[in-house]
Length: 396
Ligand code: CTP
Image (cartoon, rainbow, N blue to C red):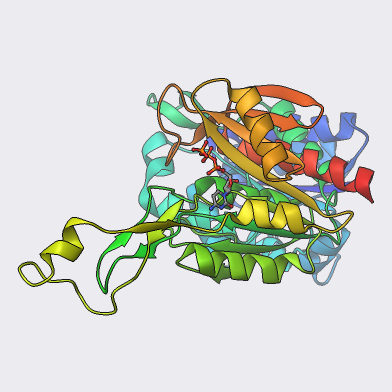
């Protein structure tokens, strides 16, 4: 592969030399593009020597008349490491005022950004919003390490080791396309079941797990439809989002999307029950005391079970289970009862998982259970997508 490494003006710029070497050691061709500020830290000559002359800094004065387009076209991946807060902001807003940012805008290949900066700059809401915007457009943001920073502060902002950056990029590139051409449906978030015009029954599902699955499936090349209840997390802009409120609406939208999908991942926290009748008007104290004191509930349809029992040969259905005891055997029972092919079982005995960033998860299939241990939701999602790809190729 041809990997373009972008170097920006950060104290960690010297580590970019090793990033270049790591890719070269793995057998890849490397070119480099540097910003003017990067040259305050490491000279162009260093990268020229490392890349046999394939390091550039300027939009003008090059033998190549349109260097940003030429660089973008020859790259199979663009890896900006380190990426300053300023360059992340420019990329998020489409600003193209030098060779590096113009090339980034012209790239159609996978783009990776490894932010490195002071902890307060990294944690600043503006930087986080810029990184979220980049993620939502499919840019892979490599999480910085936490530790003692060059400025003397301690916290996240350190450029990860060059070997870690290279492995993250190469793993992602090699697993990219595992779901190419596949259509994946994800249900996500809570459902909202109205009691009257202003009141409802719902739950605290944040949609974080669903959002992580959506991104992992998109990164693996799938076309993703997410059927979601109201959430504040943002879904990746590449996904098609169908917003719903009630379980009945979620079932209908999920069945529609599943008709031409290859797989369904049911990550939604569907309300088990709903009020038997939803009053169109607001129930009033004094006048409607009896109706407010006792709200008859009826069971909601089970979406995972409907998709599991209705699936065609070759379609794969994945569900979730939150368990406090006998995690694997309870999940196995759920797998059979709902006719799912895989259950991601979360051990919630230590507390709730809603809103958390990590899960104690296991994969449960008809042939047994596999504990993943405590992992970030993004990592659970990545492993789930890998597993799904294996299952889909087996069932194809
Ligand atoms: N699910 C669904 N529709 C429902 C209820 C659940 O699609 N009406 C799906 C969820 O999206 C999830 C799985 O089923 O994939 C969870 O099953 P559930 O039976 O609700 O299990 P737990 O949440 O683990 O709770 P319990 O053990 O109390 O049943």
